[in-house]
Image (tube, rainbow, N blue to C red; front, side):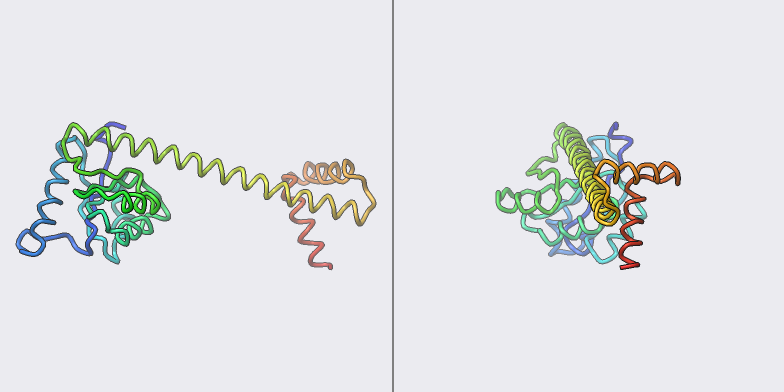
Amino acid sequence: MPPTELRLAVITATAHVPDLADDEGWDEALRLRDLVQGLRAGGYRIAGVLGADAQLPERLAALAPDVLIVDAESGARDAIEHVVWAMRDAPRPIVLFTEEHDPSHMREAVAAGVVAYVVAGLAPERVRPIIDVAVARFEHEQGLRQELARAQGRLAERAVVDRAKALLMQRHGLPEPQAYARLRSTAMHQGLTIHEVARRLLELADLLG
């Protein structure tokens, strides 16, 4: 997806967006400003700049960004976990930009859900490759998770069918092939899957005792 089609939400690790008029937040505000300018220079659209506060989930749901950009000191694990939690129902790639390099904090950030941890990477020529790789990595990991979920689902369904076959074999003295054939024929007759027939059979057996 070209950068002009991606919508980015920039999130500061603090609970509020820093104000340039605030002496204490001056450095943080300048860093955030440089980050936003660097992203725009890379051709990206900024959907919003948000603080990591209690309203973050609702604001992100309303914005529906394609990528989350977190401006944080390397040790801001709580804020990163808050961002990950805020997007739990609709995961998005999370890229963290920081000026400090700390391997232990980097590992914590990646473990929390960050797909790209970038130190001093605001140069416009670096921004696009960083985000492209982050999006590609995120999509790859999501694909792996979905495949794992499908595999686990197939195993769970097979276990249910095996239990139903065992029940038929025990109560009706059927050999395994005939028990499976009965499940299959019932499924075809009722327009259900074999797993659904097996599940209903087990539920009925539990009800009747």
